[in-house]
Image (tube, rainbow over all chains, first blue to last red):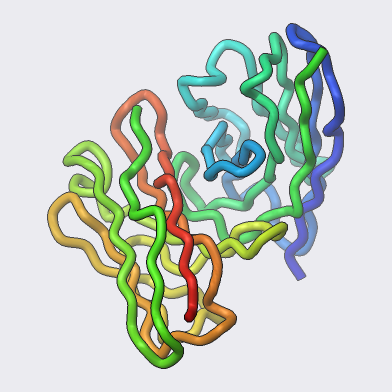
Length: 121
Length: 111
């Protein structure tokens, strides 16, 4: 059974940093792209970032480029999102999502339950 | 990059059919066959219902179908059921600097 489980969310002050993790199981992790998608409270979905199966290619939304870094450790079947210079409008539930063979495509067939990031002083 | 345009809400009675539209541009919906649809119940993670415009993943009822004409993609749900009441989001690949965009979401109410 495919599972992805996020962790690392919490309360952080504006300008601070946080690292999210996503542990995957039930599939051959290194052959699939992975993405982060977020949802602000009461709002719609927003794609944040994607990474290829090998980790060599990364993609970012304009809203986070230069502040967030996506990475993966295929030896641990784990995806990461390092978030720096956090702002109030980064407050959201962050979902880890399994993609297809090609990164930066809008097909996400398995999602975690999400982890809440709150940026507030 | 602006979000794809969806109606804020649609409604229908059990057994009826409804269609949700998703309008973009030639740089996203109209230019590529990479349009997906997601269903999200309150407090739950999104679920993939349609990908690559018309493809229905295993386990998704055949009451759900997707199509595209020009810059507008559509999700049709036939034989509406109470459990179909949820928020629906479209998503597309885009040639802009942000590679994937979502629509603003449509709340489906089953009367």
